[in-house]
Length: 296
Image (cartoon, rainbow, N blue to C red; front, side, top):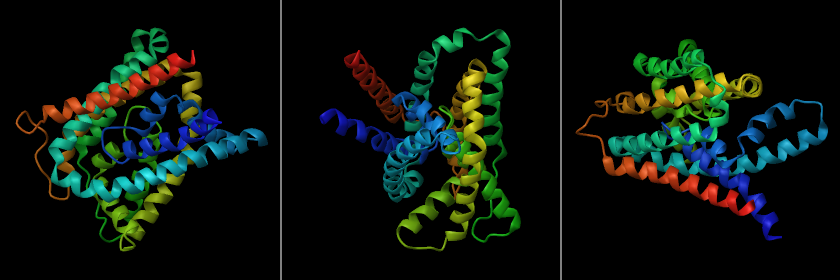
């Protein structure tokens, strides 16, 4: 009975921490799922829902429902706290994110070492493409006019939502990092905070963003699942590149605030919060390793 109860709790708890990761730039919910050992089920479930196997569809729906409950709770708590904390303590929080990402990279490399052993020299191109994509987006410094929706800004927000959710499912790049690069992070977090406070002034922004997210889900999940199954070395190389590039995106994060600040420098970098970020990921990995060792 105890084992069954813990098994039921696994997905909601994982969903909760995936939401916390998704809500902050620099950490990917996909990374949390990857480290928790549910990434394959997470990606595969979306393919099963539209598949013909009724048993797999039912099992996948229940899995995503449990995961989704935890995700909604985590996101609700995150957006009510993060918006003010993020803007007031941008350099400390960004240093924390840097630690989280820096610690996640060797964990992903270690977990995928057998896959990476199959890589050839030309696979470095996928690494460079992943890193370059994130750095390039960070350099663009887009800023959407989200206060009033017109066709151009609505299309921009729609595309941002689709790309962000596609990034969120990859164990490496944070969807919030992409939102930072697009200049949409603060408007979305602020809008969600208002929505949870029953202030619907940002409803149009959130609705268009949500439609983009749904479009991104249907377009990306099956593609990512296919790539991981059939071209894993190249895909993992690109994922590691995305993670490496996200370090630069986090450094540039302060420049994307409503009132832009300077990027992180030696004087504003917080070594304490950086170490805390590394410690959190390390503790998570050790806990998972300990649990796996007990099962074996």
